[in-house]
Amino acid sequence: MQRGRREPGSRRDLIRGIRYLGQHRWITVGAYISLILSTLSTLFVPLMARYMIDEGLNPTNPTDSDEGLVVRLALLMVGLAIVGGVFTFLQGYLAERVSQSVAYDLRNNLYEKVQTLSFSYHDRAQTGQLMTRATSDVEQLRMFIGQGLLLAINAILLLVGITAILVALNWLLTLVMIPALVLMAFIFAMFGKRAAPLFRAIQERLGVFNTVLQENLAGIRVVKAFSRETYERDRFQNANFALRDASLRSTRAVATIFPTAFLIAGISLIVVVWVGGNLAVQGDLGLGELTAFTSYLSLLLIPVTQLGFIVASASQAGASGKRVFEIIDTENEIKDKPNAQPLDNIQGHLAFEEVSFRYFKSGANVLSHVSFNAEAGQTVALLGATGSGKSTIINLIPRFYDASEGTIRIDGVDIREVTLESLRRQIGIVLQETRLFTGTIRDNIAFGRSDATFEDVQEAAKAAAAHDFIMGFPDGYDTLVGERGVNLSGGQKQRIAIARALLLNPRILILDDSTSSVDVQTEAHIQQALDRLMQGRTSFVIAQRISTVLHADLILVLDKGQIVASGKHQDLLESNPIYAEIYHSQLVEDAAISTVVMEG
Image 1 (cartoon, rainbow, N blue to C red):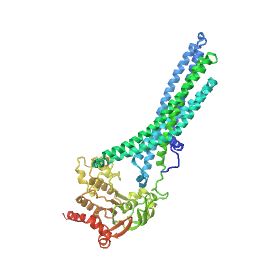
Image 2 (image 1 turned 180 degrees about the horizontal axis):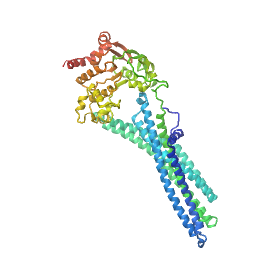
Image 3 (image 1 turned 45 degrees about the vertical axis):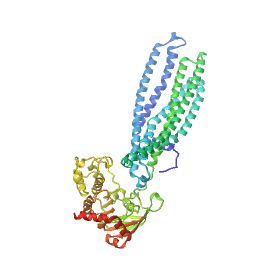
Image 4 (image 1 turned 90 degrees about the vertical axis):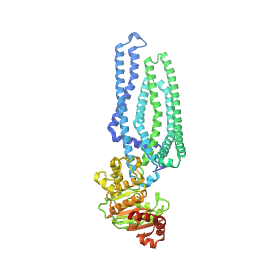
């Protein structure tokens, strides 16, 4: 995110949000034409009342009253009220429609941007903050575009129109009220300057609140397993208190401004009535003229008091707009080059050439000068302690991250020279953290190939040793997996994830410790299926069990981000002490169990 470049709630972000109206110009034009006509009908009503009193009723000489004029003016006033009501409805409906359309566009743009951002961005971002920006912040911006902006235009029209009419009616009384208007404008301007950081603080606290809530609900089983309900409740209450405190600070500011404005407006009205009453008694001001003047003065209080809402809404929308556009403007670290070419019909030869990597463009290297060659169709096993760099290597292949130094090539082509979509279409991945989506088992297996037939889905499930347990459910492949796959065991979820990857029929297969949540017997069945499916595919496997390592064409032993040994199992066992230590301390027991299962 670009921080420190602009002040919170800046006009630039607010104006940028308003520009989205250009994508719905005809609805916007209709809303503002309706607003103008509605405002004009409102402005003419007091004038009709003035002529009705002074010309129709003639209070100075009641015997000269013109009843016909009174009736015509009354009917005209009723007609203006009807016209005003119709256009007020159209204004409100069209404004809501266009603001919802703008919110729709903003949410789509925001979601599309989040989908394209690299892993490194999501490593730093908080889910709750992203959710707040896509919901609450967009809604604040929408509210201003749908209501605040219209109120601002309405206020300007009323202020200009009423001031002109008041000057025409009686310039002396107009001068009496000008100091009050100037004072209120100054107060609202000061309020706007103070309100912007307060409203931004609310949105930030709301983001923290949503993050705490999301983490707690997602990890509720862990919370209960470790009896951390009290701790999590206190953490939630602290976030809730911070949100309440920020909201109350802004509420105090708003609650202070409106009584002050009403007090000034009330005093100015009293002074105008007193001065106007004296003029009327002296015969220098007609009763209808005074009535119209006070009516217009009352109308003038509407846009003046609207200024408070407009300023608050603009400040809040500006603060929210900044948070929305911070994400939309975030530069994607992983993207296609302008001249990127599609990568099609690959053989699967993959090479790392002096590849180094560090997170966030700073700190120590996670990988240092890693080089190896994987021939097409080979199975490459990555071995090493936690933090040795195994997952980093497989994350670099589909460009979830870009190498800080060095080059990665597929069939001799630098992967940064090809399109991301074509690169990732060649790669099937089963990540260490299994993630399923709400829907059926069939939907999850076909996630990467929406055009897959039911037979294709079944074939992939059988290859991943998932078909039998799926058919054990009453609804079979139409069984709902629940949120995050909650209705399935860890092993079942991983087998579905494997089937999902295999359905793509990829040339390169990545298995990130994909059998860690299954028992040894199930792993043996999965491994037998994977052995067949790996034929002709370049496969990268992170596993802690000996079965995969024994059959790998190339084993890479990593330690502190470097390849310290490479070769086949027997050669490494005899020549490399690190590999031998890993073998004896972590894998020998699994090897014995696997052998028993295989023989059985």
